[in-house]
Length: 453
Image (cartoon, rainbow, N blue to C red; front, side, top):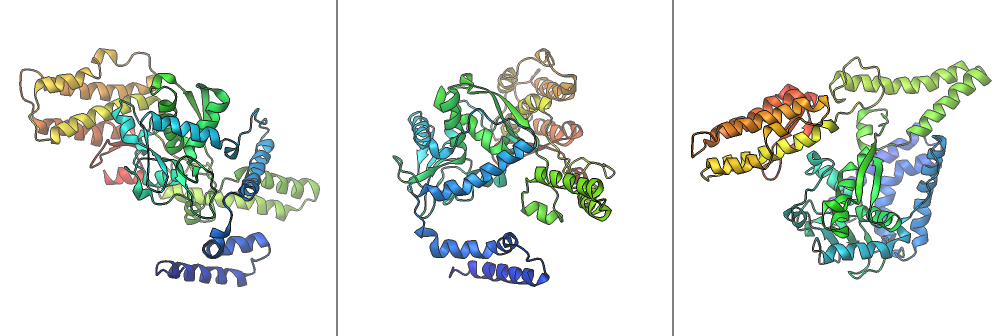
């Protein structure tokens, strides 16, 4: 609290909270807590955080049980059946530790000086595996990586690579803690689900479901740790299929608020609005109350309209009548061909930018890894044909440089690579974002990219 960096932040939050109270909106304890939490949490954690016994799990269980109950209530409101099995991480600590020990024994994890354990992405890929299978375009997304490590994560500079993720984290005083062979700590986020699922379902999961927001990094981190724990190969297929559910993002009063607060209580808001309209029109004929409930939804529609007009809502047109985030994504049917195209382009691009002489034999070996052009295009959706055609064209262009010459012009290879990025896939709504090191990121074209291009 005495550091120079914390004082200005504390002063600002205090001023913000003080200005909030006289405005007449302080009508419940929950509003008071929400207004003051940024000040209270920092201060209370500094004063009394270390006094909390990390072995008294009742505190953490009571806190999390509230969220568990609320989630189940939301599911009941949506007529979703109760699960056959309900697992809690605190009941599976021994299984989680055994799961981590097996990953370490297989050579894909390492410990740091504080007793934390991290999964080694480099070793995993050097063994012939692929990381970020579900959303390869997000593998270098720092925001999602930080979100995947959790708010209690610390000292991430001790990791061998920024892509490595925690399997076990050493705990500070006052944080949840369990004994382990590496010292007192707690499980990482992703290892929990892997250990619990394998404990209940064995070595194979036919359908692995979850929200689309879990695809990266959560499920993309589950996959490698499952693979190296079970059989160190993709053929183990602990997860056969992933079934994703799309999120509905609730628009707050301002776009800034929506960006800084993740609100997933849409179910309750819709049910509440329905009840308000019913009570106002059917029970008491209170038309003003019904109009007020409708106006709240109209406010969300107006914010959506503004986002559409300014091109901030994916590919949604300015006149799109839908409410909420339209979102854009890389089409599922295109991903096998885009991933292959991007990988081939990365290899060719790195080779062309190197100072080595490029021979026809080198290009031939690269082309042979993809297979013949005649093999492309079988057993696919018609929607995928444009992506297949781009891959086929790029492969044929490289092959054409391999005819009648022993040395290939690297500048011509780079021109082919640039055209793929700037024209061929861009026209299909896909952008290949080249990185200084590593693979290009595959992501959808946004309005800003269209203007820039």
